[in-house]
Length: 568
Image: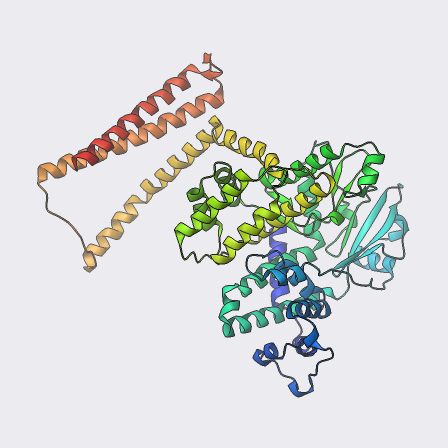
């Protein structure tokens, strides 16, 4: 299944990025020129190589009375769904864009009139089924509409209430053309403007394109829901809508209808006798669990994408935009959390550099000092007054000053946590999300220090060492080839044969001690996992012996290295 999904995604992305109608691209470029001219961006038009009568482009509004950032937002709204979504995505890059522009981009709304379609005919053609055999009723009008899809109420033959999310006809071609034009615009503007090059405009567009392409596929959204359901199986605090694969396709998604109320409806929460503080903390913990434990989290948890069920469970809606953390991403996130909790700015700076796709840090000391200032702010602001907006504003400034650009999941994560805290504080003003993060940080620490984790890490180190040893003959052959071709150079100093033998002997001894240390640690971990008797304090006695012996070797090796350094 995973192979098929991966293959599908690969093919889908390739088709979106490469297949579009050149004629439609030309027509669309003419529309874009007209809209840009309408809002007073003739300087930008002059840089574009697209064909068209520039003389006929006239302003339709008095641009002198509207500031440039407002005009950018208005132009994006008129340019259509893809550009609106690009603006929404850019609004999460606060450290890279002027603050006033970000505030304008946050006003962008994906509100479009519903498209007219015979829904029963659409479903029959898309699913290849007799719709009357599957559905008792299907609403003729949608109850929600967006740029990519719209949603209908329906009832299955067994009486189950469902919703049908259907993709707009022709949206694929529109998005393909617009994405191709966005890439052209980004490339041209970046080449002609150093400031835009520093903003990594092309990276923003490519990151956005990948996210948009995944959102357009309802098969991917269905798999997201199924994975989310599996992650929270047995959790009584959350409700995930059931999906119906037999009634779904890449253009249709059939899922359970959830009858709840808006998560920010305080009046309804209290009317039902629910405790607001408990509800808020449950929501925050569920989101942190998505991020830290599962590495698969909702990318846009605004109030419209969350609801409270009558029994108090929290439901997340719209799974098209999901953040995904790979193994290395999760390890880096764990390092980030541990460094932040322990207020280790040097280590945190290293983690940030490792995570960043692009970084231009002009002054490392100032960079670390800025991080220490964040720690100082946390220590000196009362818990009730400490908000993520305050922290993120400081962090975004650091990001902007050092021209840091991160993978998409970082922006999704920062936006998601910020939205969750905003919802939480709206319901419960005394919320302190930092306190909610600490239990997860302690859990990470305990997992890293567990025997299983130590065993796994030791096994990985030994396997890595074994691979290096296995490659040794190849490396030796490569060295011999260098000798034969005369390309080998050697930097050396003369020492006596006796001294050389002593150095060699000491080096080999240390390697042997290091191997014995790792082997005894590995053996001890295996014994702990096997739970061999007898035990002392819940750990097998033999494991105590192995681990104790290993650390004796480690101490001996450490002392030997210190003595060798002093002798040098």
